[in-house]
Image 1 (cartoon, rainbow, N blue to C red):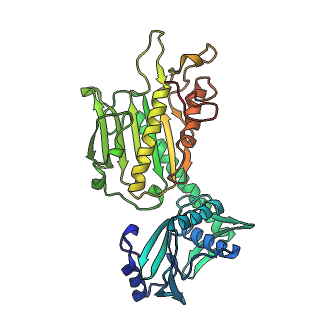
Image 2 (image 1 turned 180 degrees about the vertical axis):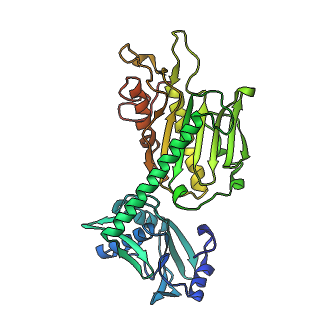
Image 3 (image 1 turned 90 degrees about the horizontal axis):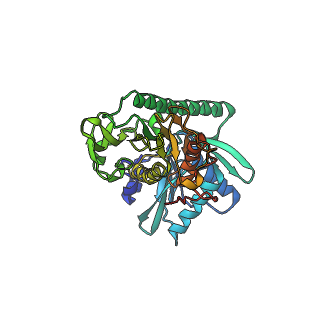
Length: 392
């Protein structure tokens, strides 16, 4: 549709749509005017946006007059406060389309005003429905534009979503099995590992492939709990390693897959040496803090690289059976002191729909489960209001 990157589209590209007679259809729709303020206008806008997400993605162009589906003339828009307008339509999408989705905006300067472009990515896991003042429908697109989905189409869409979900879970299970079998990109200093997987659903629903050479020196990929690191290209994408003890192995690595998946593994962070009481302790504050630092970096990288949400986030602790949880002495009692009773802690995964997710809504439930394993009700690195407030 547009050869250029979305951020580089300009007036000449819109003129080319007209001169080439690019018709409305599966991937583009033209609108002379911005969405109106009536309920029917808002329903129309929401149906347009969701129909692209539920099919193959595409563009809505506001400020381009069409006739019989063909673009005819640029009709410049006058918008006094573009930021306020974007916030307004973002709010409409967020409040009236479920599950949550996003549209990317761009105002293109043209003679006499602006044209507004909306870019909607294909939804890669679940179908989105319009929920607005009693209106509750799913929409798709065909050559003639949008249309409501029937029960057969809804069933097929959900079956496809279930298949993608299972592929993601299978990938994670296979990677944990491989890591425990020693199949890491390089030897690690310990079999006990903290493993973070950030898996975009698009890795299993599209043929996207990152240009790994473009990301070789991106410092946002540095491994968990590391101050020095070394990147290189490998078969899977970009591998960034941190620290080593000669032949004993590395402390941590980040593997960026060409599909956009990130695997971040840290060994030695979960405690290996027994203390005076004979117990080995998992340093709860250290690993929770390091995950909270690493996750925003990795998500910032993925957003800059153009990897689209949604994501499934996995956090796993391997080879931890018999270890105790290292916590502040004020929380320890004989009743609470239980060791981990299994080798692998597969924590509940989290589905993330957008980049602006609250980090603690993702990881606090996972951290709580680790504390539960050792007899505690919740992570004590959060206060009673659920705010990150560890004792230092």
